[in-house]
Length: 583
Image (cartoon, rainbow, N blue to C red; front, top):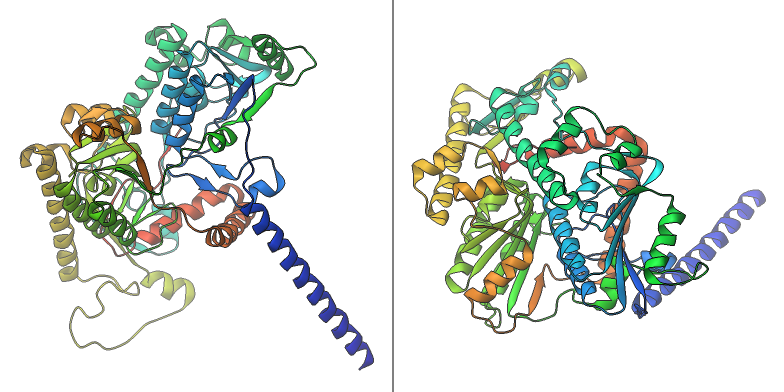
């Protein structure tokens, strides 16, 4: 008994001490977060752009980052990053850019925005150096816009062309005795293919080959312009496998030289005219953006609404487009008399057809009150196009993936899995023939299949009507260019699905003209969450994701894919293929 009491008291005291220390730690966290550290750019500054960093559409905050690093904890959004690179061009304190090109965490359209900003920066006459130990194609796409591109002498350069891989789950489902009951409309609607095929269908292979070649052609064109090499020659480098070593990239003028990190630092010092022992005043783009501000105001005459991620019904989206949240946001912008135009930034592969319809409806109402301009990111496809098609004007990047006008739904029949794999059977009663329609424990009847297909066809017809009405196109033309087919932004421009090629700033300029605004001022949505909510929600999510990635390793991608399949279950979807990997 005495032993037990000693153990109990020791544990109790330890718990009190731990709770007290945790309480003190939290006080320190909030005190640190509440104290805004002033960031000073200083003279002779070089802004560092790390391409491996993912710039989401909306600025993200890591409440813990500022506790253990010199960073501010704010990661600028893509448009913030672009604006601040352009601001650095006219900042007398900034003498150049240093592009860290070990990887690229951004999509094709996002990379185009960053690349264009770097190209504009170079017009100031300031230097731009890019350096990588291992240079991927996606990173090279941006880095090639630099004044000088250097690679580690023993590193690597990838210049082999583009490929796209899709994961097919039909064999897995057969082994598990699960039947994916699939209903779709659109010959090219390939989102369900991984559930019903072992490999690409002919239609999907045609569309994928076409848009992949468009993306690759854009890559070669941009690189060719910067490196003064014609695209046919660049194509030959990849086709003949000529770029195997960094020295090959130097020989064929893809890069400017082979350098170790210290040699690049010495060259930057010479450009700054500082001594060998002096340190370069490097400032990360994160810190520079924090120093310059410009993350959006509490009021403005143009509402910039970011819609990033999958489209879902309900509330509380986290890097997702939750329809209830976005209806409220758009309505607020519509009813606010100070806001004279709406710029709607869409970066979405689509999702729920019903949620897309709800957002479309609110944007249509907004358009009756004030100009609505859409700007497309990496994706604005399927449901992402659904919520874009009513706009007064639509901007896309040449390498945006859009279109995919089609609908599908999936209802799994897991009777075989329950019976043969788990030994579980089901039985019950019902008051009407369709009372249990859609249950996963039995197959659909022929009559139920007809009704579900009819529903999918009806939603598809509505989708096409929305496009025809919004784009002022004949119904027959919309039918010919829909069918679930994916188009690049450049192709979409020719087809009339978008109006102009350009980015966020171009859309803002258009809204300024349409609303006749003398001095545009932006208010961004979604509005920032409070610190306490960001702290605990982000912390718990990060722990869960990190744990799963550590446990599953390379299989984490499979887990993510299955999770997306489950999310599609039983609800009509307007969505891209759920896993597209372009390298």
